[in-house]
Length: 100
Image (tube, rainbow, N blue to C red; front, top):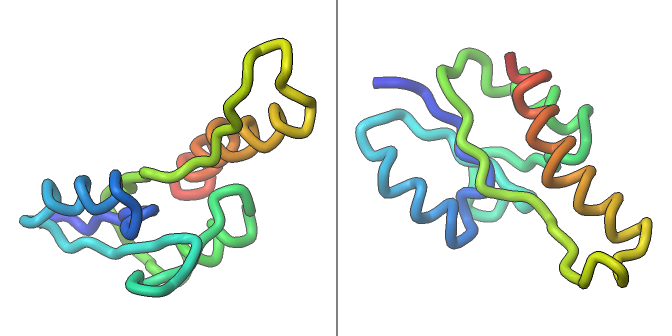
């Protein structure tokens, strides 16, 4: 049995991921702590560091969250691009970088 942190456990994808992790010890995390073991914001290094420190040892992380702005390439504003980059790209990178 492995210890797995599931980020985004309350969302549709998180609930689907949870069904496949039944034989493992699953620690849940999300933007809201409602129904989760921990609260985390993947766009915040401080929040991720706090999560990993509080959890302690774990074997894997499954992430099902990330904000993505939707518009045509020409219509996307810099603010929309930055929201997407900070969540979908840097959020994922920081989970691995800080979590290791």
